[in-house]
Image 1 (tube, rainbow, N blue to C red):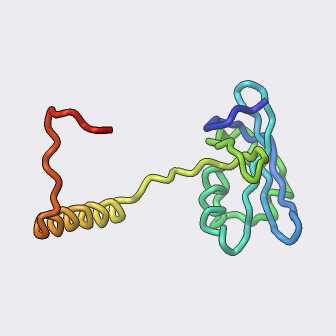
Image 2 (image 1 turned 30 degrees about the vertical axis):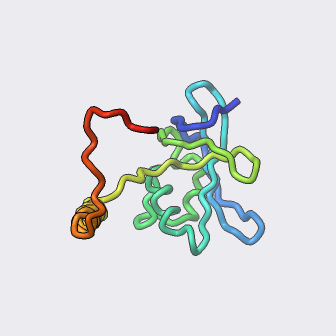
Amino acid sequence: MLDYGPIKGQITGHRTKMLGDKLAVSISCETPSGDKCDALIFLTEKAMNMARRSLKVCGFDIDTHDLEELDANPTLLAGNIVPLMVDEWNGKMQVKIELDSRADKGVLMSATAKLRAAKKKSADLGDEPPPIGDEEIPF
């Protein structure tokens, strides 16, 4: 039985499939504890960027390979270790390929500038809170 949270999985196979009118890639994995699971990568218009990143994490570069190769060779990615996230969606357990979601340098620089601007604006308005010292914090 899978536990919720991050785990590692070793790819054992994969295939493309239709789920209603949505195309998906199903990545079959086995965890270190021997549990088997499938992670779905949806190939919808809204999810294309995430799908590209997920396939890349699995070891599949869509810029050099075609999706047909996943069905033609269902063990093409077998043996690759991938980070997985087990969580719940609509009351059901789901497994996803875990993506590195760290912010890039440009996003961090922009947020830093905005935080500094907010401090300056607060100071100009006299809204700056007193510095936190050794006194007791009320929460």
